[in-house]
Amino acid sequence: MIIVMKPNASAKQIGHVLQRIEDAGFRAHISRGEERTVIGVIGDERHLDPDQWSLLEGVERAMRVLRPYKLASREFHRENTVIELGDVHIGGDQIVIMAGPCSVESKEQILATAQAVKEAGAVILRGGAFKPRTSPYSFQGLGEEGLKLLAEAREATGLLIVTEVMSPDQVPLVAHYADILQIGARNMQNYPLLRAVGETNRPVLLKRGMSSTVEELLLAAEYVLSQGNYQVMLCERGIRTFERVTRNTFDLNAIPVLKELTHLPVIADPSHGVGLWQHVAPVARGAVAAGADGLLVEVHPDPANAWSDGAQSLTPENFTRLVEEVVRVAEAVGRTVARPAPADTSTVAA
Ligand code: PEP
Ligand code: MN
Image 1 (cartoon, helix red, strand yellow):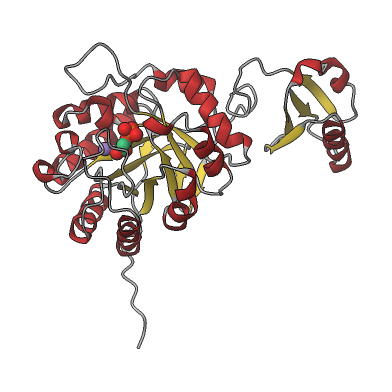
Image 2 (cartoon, rainbow, N blue to C red):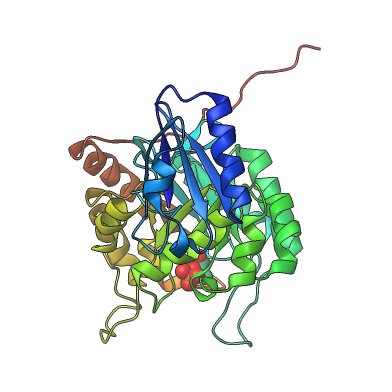
């Protein structure tokens, strides 16, 4: 159930409603909008009668949220959630481009890629340090060493870092280095992991499981939100279908559908979505035209020798072209692309 307070509801009235919720054995989630305060009642609400709660002082209306995901639903929160990381705002008017290699391989590789994707127009650097590989014999990532290299790349370029965390016990370590915690497709329904990132204050990039429905993705997001971390962005990265000519089938439908169902930002990953570098840019353009708030793109200085996902990785040159195209598509749909901050050229006086 959600309780919408009157625009002029007093702090005392809000406090009273919160107390009643607690007394009834439920948890409250408060969302203070520009206009009014909305309170989510969390728990098994079958025995709650919205009509009775509507009678409390300061309450405009109480209603059940019909969707199984509540905090994630647009019924609950009409305005878009905008995740603010310094100057980078994810989910607002601007489209945010995140790019970098599938895996962090070496200092030279990550620094060169970071510089290249920044020059092309990315504002967030991606790179896996803990890699969820299908085969246990494939490269599993550099681990903490990879996180340190990402932090060095952030230091050198000013780009923010998004990187994957694979298990609850890794969360403190990864959150120490990363600006955004990525939950991979294979872990979308790893509920202890979702709860663990929900207990941090780091934004979460939650990727759709390769065989998950949109509703399952939203319920996975609800796990994170229900722990008190409301900074969640959802990522469409392709689903598994009967079609084998591409690695996955990028579900373009999911983008407008998610924008309708949820207030959370929606990011598109055309790289895993299609799996073949020559088709990444067209899918990226389509995703932006369809309403994506951001892109996650794999870029490698030498795709032929990448330690993972080389076939879908763009060279810096091809990525530069992709950004130029996306800028034009963004303009056509009334949006702009966030630009990286200019390099800090200030010098310290001797
Ligand atoms: C990745 O981003 O490199 C990755 C492993 O993605 P996914 O979880 O979508 O397969
Ligand atoms: Mn990858």
